[in-house]
Each structure stands twice: as C-alpha cells, then as structure tokens.
Length: 336
Ligand code: COA
Image (cartoon, rainbow, N blue to C red; front, side, top):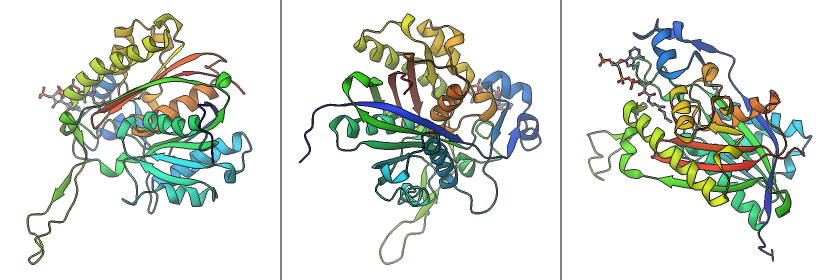
C-alpha cells in the first residue's frame, strides 16, 4: 500500500528531434500563392521541417527525442514507470505511446496517448506531475510530438504556411518537496469554440443499408486564424497572471516566457500585455513553424543547449490551441 503524501517533481533531462527535410517560405510560394515576406511578417516563420518518406510517423520522432533525453542522463529505459505521449497526429487511433514504449525498451512503463493539440505538452506535464506528487510513479517520460504535415491541405495557403513536424521529450522524477520544480499550474477548456481549429471527422452520406451506421474519415486542418489569434492574445495572459498571482510571484521575477510557438506576433503580444521584456521570450519558431504539442519541449531543449537557462530561473510555460484549450505551468529551474 502506497502512502499518498504529496511529493515534488524535478526535471532530469530533455531531448528533441526534428526531421531533416526543411521547407522554406520561398519553396512554399511555389506550391501556393504566398511569399516569404507575407509569411514572415504575419507569423515570424522562415522555414519548417517535414517528415517525408514512406512509413515515417510521429513514433519515429518521439522515439528519437526520448532516447536523446535518456542518453543525456544515462538512464536505463526500464526505470521509466510511465510514458505520456501528447499528440494529435498518432499513426494508430488506439494510441501510439505503446509503440514508443516498445521501441525504447521501456518494458516497465505504462504508456498512453493524450490528445490536446497544441496544449498537449502542458497537459501531459501536469498529468505526469499528479502521478509524481502522489508517489504512484517515480520516473515519467512526457513527450510532445506531432506530424501535422500529414493533416494539412497543401493547397490551403491560410494553414499550410504555419505548421511543421517535431518531437520534444522530458524526463521527470519524483523528489522531496524542497527540490520541487513545478510550482503551480492553471488549465482551461472552452469547447464552445472547437470549430475555430479542428481536424474534424466527416461521415459519408451513405449509411450501411441494414445497420444504418455512418462511417467516415478525418478531414484536413481547418482554422479561423483571426479568432484563434484573438483567443490566444486575450486568454493566455489571463492564465499566466492567475498562476503567478496564486504563487505570489511578480512579473519582474519571471526570467523566461516559454509559450507554445504558434506565431511570433502572438508571443510578442502576450509579452506586451504582461509587460515582459522581449529578451525574456524564448522563440525558435522561425526555424520550425508551429510544431503543435512538440513546440514547448523543443524550444526548452534548445534553450538549455544554448545555456540560456540558469539554476533557480523562473520559467512561465503556456500552451494554447484547439479545443479550445490553454494553460500555464510555472517552473523553477533546477540544475541537478
Ligand atoms: N499568403 C498571402 N496571402 C494570404 C495568405 C498567405 N499565406 N493567407 C491568407 N492570405 C490573405 C487572405 O486571403 C486575405 O486576403 P484578402 O484581404 O484579399 O481577403 C489577407 O491575406 C489577410 O488574411 P487574414 O486571414 O485576415 O490574415 P491575418 O492577418 O489574420 O493573418 C494568420 C493570418 C493565420 C497569420 C493569423 O490570423 C494568425 O496567426 N492566427 C493565429 C493562427 C495560429 O496561431 N494557429 C495555431 C494556434 S495553436
């Protein structure tokens, strides 16, 4: 019988993976009517990575990112108790996490998918934290991975310019409350506006003649860009403020703002609303576009590789996207 005293959680390692194939704005302008100038001015994106080639899936990227994180700390994958794969582009509707578990040889881990679009990593992190706080599990691998290139209508210039493929992973470990790095979180959902951003399921018009069953298939990404923009810029600062206020942390104490990498204008508008200076924004979306659930762990991994983040830095992490879902996690970074 486990004793459910609340424990803390610390981040042991991060890893990330992007496909080799790069698609820049000029190349996109050969496919749809657009230009490098239009895309860069409206989004801050210069290029994105695409997972090309046959039989390549989100699993390949997720496995690569996970192995990189494990190798950084020479951790035996058998020590992982739980794998949460945040993805909205699985290659099996029953879930892809179990295939990641098998491929990285994490035989002792229970594994499941979590679907929450671009907020998936934040929700995965918070879910992992619950298991670590209660002491149910000791080591958790959280992966954010998406290959939205497979769900894009490549003749739709309003969406095909935005997205890219990638994976990011972090390994969390239960610890004493004194070493806890996850200070608080704040999560939200508003299903009233799910139609603003979706990969909808569409039923075919001819049902099974005897059973009256309608079968169908998933459509491509559909988005109301203006509404999504307004939602992000209005709701994300509120979520961040709620979280910081509950912790009694002032804006001045924030060292890094790590938002879902959707659009440079959204990053700047959120920072402006909060009076957070530009040099505190972590941004790498010019190279990768919007990589959905992967964007936050990918940007975190790069920032760590660039030695940007120091011991005891306060990092405000916010995800937002389809659902609509959005949420914040405040971290106090610890170097172990
Ligand atoms: N290249 C050139 N022109 C384009 C274009 C493209 N890729 N996409 C749209 N346009 C055109 C439109 O057709 C429109 O033309 P019109 O004025 O003749 O009708 C014009 O540019 C303006 O379009 P609009 O949709 O109003 O642009 P916008 O300023 O809202 O920018 C986005 C579009 C998508 C960049 C912006 O709405 C946005 O970033 N939204 C948030 C999207 C997002 O982050 N989604 C993921 C969240 S997880």
